[in-house]
Image 1 (cartoon, rainbow, N blue to C red):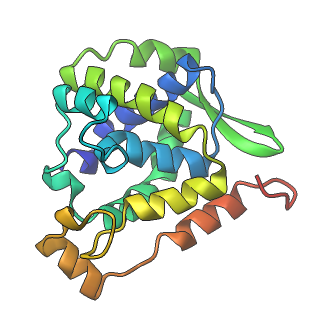
Image 2 (image 1 turned 90 degrees about the horizontal axis):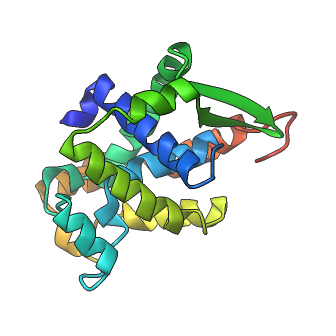
Length: 200
């Protein structure tokens, strides 16, 4: 899958951080960045209303809720979050992203990162920018707590869950054998993202 490629993931992060800068939200915590990173890449997990004009725009841009990438979302969310700190460390080492400390650690794109992100002209890059613009505006209205609750709902797959149409063999295996909750990652990230013992 494309997300297994580190260069692809780094490009996505740069596009996401560039979108945050463009929307005047230049600094973001590790926890929120992890949620945004996954949901912007998989926006149809969030926009499920068939009549939603934003969903239709994303479908026209090439996103497809039936794609394999939407299988087992909770497992994929956990895996992607486990890679995030490594990917951020690479971007920081390249001078494309910089951490700042103001009560908590926030990450923002640097001028060099903005310049590089602006050079991405592939069709997928344009589609990803659209997804980022739509999802960031929606997710920014949620508090950290509400975002945690929402992402649990959006990544839940089951016959009685909010996405029963997405239940397939891969999800059944996850439900039976790999029921690792995503809460521990979110809670540990929130704790590690504090300064002097103060939560973000």
